[in-house]
Length: 127
Image (cartoon, rainbow, N blue to C red; front, side, top):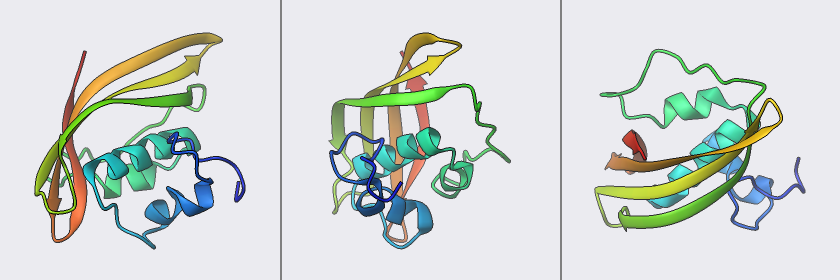
């Protein structure tokens, strides 16, 4: 996996892109970067990263990932705020997957907040 391209679609290798965010070695600088790392977490089955980066006010007790669902591509459609000097931001994206041999996609407008220098996923509306 060290030389595999990151599932987030950045074009970088996973080890240099989202993996350091998953291990806690690096913080997400923007809301979009956090959202990309969360997509990558779905793709590689890292439920711990999803919980750790979920805002405590909306975080569920657990996250169950479906091992049959394979997340294949991420398209960032729009963003607002969420920069290095912002305290909140939104990212609209489309996540593509395969489940039971069928292709599907999920479009979401996600909200993020920054606290103590860390970005957190708050919630999202599916379209």
